[in-house]
Image (cartoon, one colour):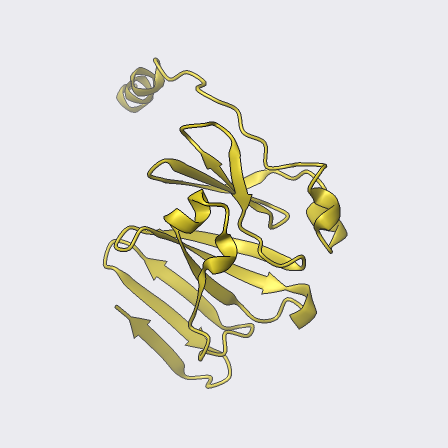
Amino acid sequence: GFLRRSSEEHFRNVQLQMEYDTHDPTVAPTWQLAFLRRRSRVLELVAAEDILVALSHSGICAAFSRESNRRVCFLNVKPDEVIRSLFFNKSNNSLITVSVYSSDNYSSLKCRSTKLEHIRGGTPALGTPLFDTECLRWPGFVEFDDVNGKVLTYSAQDRTAYRVYD
C-alpha cells in the first residue's frame, strides 16, 4: 500500500545521468594481482562534493569527477593493495580507505586518509596513514561512526584493547 506507493512516487522522476566504469584494460596490467585485473561488481559508492568514488568487489577503487564525468584516479596506490572499505570524513573533506595487501598475506588492515584535493589532482599517494601504531591484524577491526564522529578500533594483538578516537 502506502509504503510501496511512496517509494514509487519518490523515484518516479529519477533518470540516468551518467555511466562510469571502474574497469580499465589499459591500466589493468599494472595491477600485481590477477583478480584486480578482472571486471567485478561495485560494492560501495561514496559521493563527496564533486567526486564519486566506486569500490569494486575485487578491491579496485576508482574516483570520478562529476563535473568532467571522467575517471580522476585509482585510489589503490600500491600494485598489491586491495581496498576493502571506504568512509567519507566530512569534518576534514577526506576519504578514508581501509586496505589489505598481498605482501602481508591480507592479514592487517591499513587505513589511509586522502584529502579530496589530492584525489581531484590524481595524487592519492599523498594520503596520510591512520592508526599505524595499532595492530589491526585479523580478527582486529576498525569501525567509523559518522553520526557521532568517532572511530572504534580493536587490536587483536592486545586481545582486550578497544580504542575510541574522536
